[in-house]
Image 1 (cartoon, rainbow, N blue to C red):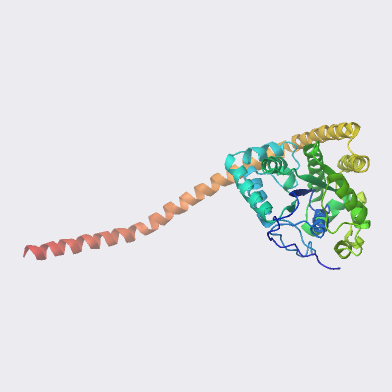
Image 2 (image 1 turned 180 degrees about the vertical axis):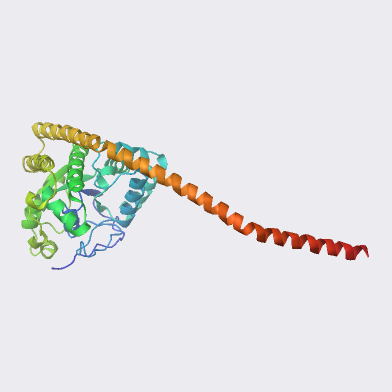
Length: 355
């Protein structure tokens, strides 16, 4: 298999078609790198792309600046990439509300669009910043398209556990929360959901569908044979299987994730539907209750942990103060002797001067 090389950051704006901006969304290990890579081999550019490593040897197809930008503000908001809290988005939105944050993003995106008119931006953290990116892109006169990768949560959880050593209970819960958040935030925008299993099995029909549905200027077109994507996408990339027996998560959480996946799959196959939207909203409300119940369940444990942390902090402060006093007491005689010697030297000098 040939490793796809990210396209260079070169000026292609002169004489090019209108700007085209594609955001690839989905939790880590959902196939977002595969999709972004296929788009880069079809005429799109990932600016300042991060190279691959052992967990993703074909490349991440993520812009370094974007990853650093997202990480910075997620840390400020104390929100994780696969956060399980349904209200975490509000925390993040407060962190990126200042005008200077929007200006920072606008400056970067404007510069990239000036060099490459067809951009694909992919990062598993992207969904938390969707509204900010959409506002900035719209101000710059570009209507972004959203490609949402859909992979079975049991596969995603197993893959994250294998490659990232992630705990499976929060991985499944985080998948549910982020998947529902992604669907809700992109509802009403130009979007397309792509099942990872179908992309890896037969990539051409999926890229043709994307091109036609989202008006993507793919070059070379998917019908081209041979095509660079032929050597990039290999069905063997799908190493995990959608089997809940391999996932150590409670049954009720597995069932909730399964229902979420089924409804999102319906959305991918049938298109936008008020019935599916309502079903997903109902699942989101149910998940919020499950999360609240879990918080209540561990409430006493969390309070004890906070109390213990405060007590440890007090003990450490007292021990530090005691050590400082003991050190001061131990050095006091020495300092006293030096001071006495200094006084004797001064007195002798004065007596010499008087003579």
